[in-house]
Image 1 (cartoon, one colour):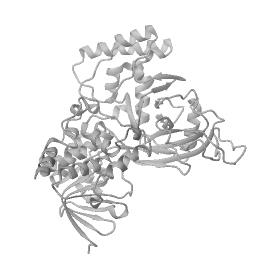
Image 2 (cartoon, helix red, strand yellow; image 1 turned 135 degrees about the vertical axis):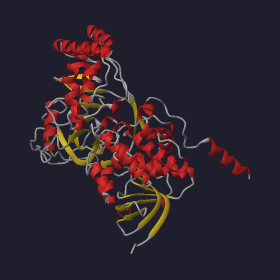
Image 3 (tube, helix red, strand yellow; image 1 turned 90 degrees about the horizontal axis):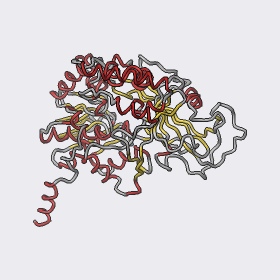
Image 4 (tube, one colour; image 1 turned 90 degrees about the vertical axis):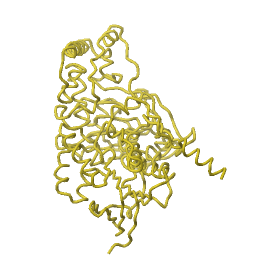
Amino acid sequence: MAKEEISVDVLVIGAGPTGLGAAKRLNQIDGPSWLIVDSNETPGGLASTDVTPEGFLYDVGGHVIFSHYKYFDDCIEEALPKEEDWYTHQRISYVRFKNLWVPYPFQNNIAMLSKEDQVTCIDGMIDAALEARVANTKPKNFDEWIVRNTGVGVADFFMRPYNYKVWAVPTEKMQCAWLGERVAAPDVKLVTKNVILGKAAGNWGPNATFKFPARDGTGGIWIAVANTLPKANTRFGEHGAVTKVDADAKKVSLKDGTVVKYEKLVTTMAVDSLVEFMGDKELIDLSKGLFYSSTHVIGVGIRGERPERIGDKCWLYFPEDDCPFYRATIFSNYSPYNQPQADEKLPTLYTAAGDKPSSSAPKEGPYWSIMLEVSESSLKPTDNKNMLRDCIKGLINTEMLKPTDEIVSTYHRRFDHGYPTPSLEREGVLTKLLPALQDKGIYSRGRFGSWRYEVGNQDHSFMLGVEAADHIVNGTVELTLNYPDFVNGRRNTERRLVDGAQVFNKSKRAVD
């Protein structure tokens, strides 16, 4: 017998960006009844932030705020409206290669390499440019895309080893549709000019400038967004944990015995987990064609002034095998509140070389911190027991730390579902799995709900939820899910948190 039975028009499972996006839109539309549930008391999902006992903050991997959508901006500004809520940064990003710091992106900055390596890269780029002129077929996989786009030199120096470290899958086993339809030939003229002039290329990419919250890390954003929702419609914590999804009866069972009846279900749990909760053998078998990698997030808190060699770097890429991590973020550069204040007294745990400190007495700071990411999969196993030690050794190898640096805090957390892999088999699975769920009234959305990495950033994830709610209520097309290239190639300004109809209704009510 159910402890309690609740009925809602729309049930939302998961209070990460996607679930909160759905809830925000349902609350704004103010039509169907809705409820959002999550097993964690703190909302945020894969965009949450942990705090170590010593007071160092670490996000679940490298998150920054940059946006393709005005609606997303509206919701974030409503949640954290003050200027002092944010820091804005210029992205300062490098690739570590043969003991050099090469500005990112690597292929635009080969002027920084040795003459011999410059020749190797340009040689490959010229071949790639010539090949691109006559090629009449699309690349069959990510590896072919890399070689056609950047040439063999850049592929071997950076693109192949780096992407294997990120995805934990060889590039030949990944498809390339997620990169966009067109394979652009490299601008060999510009690269050659920069090599001759010894000049670095300018900042590139959608996140060349980005915002970061002043306090509470990335997780603080989503706690603030969740706080704009009516509490009566939220159920976060143990009593919001899902134990079963009965798709035929349109019922979800929760851990405390509560049963929620729904008309439509927006679920942001990993779709391979969802079908297990449903107990649908056919869909479980289908989902086994999806591949993912796990992510280890490692944090190191260091006593002392931030060294000159680190400077105002934001995040750094590591394609070589002298360290286990593929990316390092100087997390203390994002906000002065991401680490303890300088007058906080902390004992030294050990030096970077692993030696015991000369004194165990707590001492004052200042402090700075590094956050590292390591991937793991069945195709790239990792030594999890020694990972922290190996990462600190990697920081010394790459000259990020000196052997004598004092470590005052460490952090290591493994996230089983880290990256949804754009494998060769992915679309064959998703084009059957997602419509089969939707036929049952289930909208599986989000980074692992819809399993499309190309729309897996925070802004995309949020809008996947918003657009699912709009589709349920108004039948509108879900552009982010179905047309990633379209939304990524423009500013999406059509949807607003306060739209014209709402303004009209408010003024009409005031007159009445």
